[in-house]
Length: 241
Length: 116
Image (cartoon, rainbow over all chains, first blue to last red; front, top):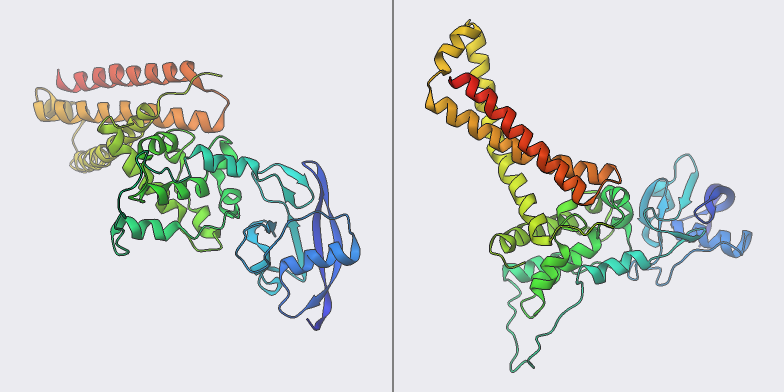
């Protein structure tokens, strides 16, 4: 990657829940991503910097950070797009416990996927035949609309309801639940709808759409949550949950 | 920690709040248009009361208005309090239930004043 001239000032969060932003001077390069800048600091300026990444191509969902106040996937975020006056401020994701520097504890985030019954429940009887799933059916289309989530927690960090109510399951877990609600093969719908209903579930969402605004995969968890609200309301009126 | 309400009850509360919001949208619009027309028409309070007294339509309309408010406001208040304070559990549910009752009692009392 050729040098592009100039220096980027990158202020990086150092510490845990308590800490401070420390400035680093990073050479500016062409097509430089925020993850490139953070990696430069760790490899050339301060080897004690902790952060998380894996694939570097927007598939694994592990490199999300707060960049200039907004949650972003850093491997696919170009510095040229987000730097203000030749400077970047990079911090850990909001709404998650900070382990150290830019690395958050993702356990609360993924625990909520389990709480939302975000796993496929097969029927107790062995399947005797294939279940036909038409790609054009409304249920499959709804599932397809949310299935590409990479679990980066950008939506979770962007959500003000999570910030106000730490028990709230959050956009990603509810989006996952919605894809399974639309899976005709799944046999755990009643338990799932009960799990996602209520104050900690879909009914807490204010439809502010921060999740949709920042989702790097351009998914729409707000629409998924609206779908859960409709389906749980019908189930509650019928006495099914 | 207080046991939360069952998911079904929470969901029904949410549904009731949305349904009452729809009713309120209509009630508020009718109420505002009525008030504007009455004021622009130069009606005094006594003249307005003369038109509402004994009117079953006004009684039913404002009676429904009060019910919609009594359903909508306490459920919303409960959500706001749970989101912005540490208040949870049965005491909050009870307080919001009492608030709903007060809205019904005082609201219908006012509606009765228009009718009688």
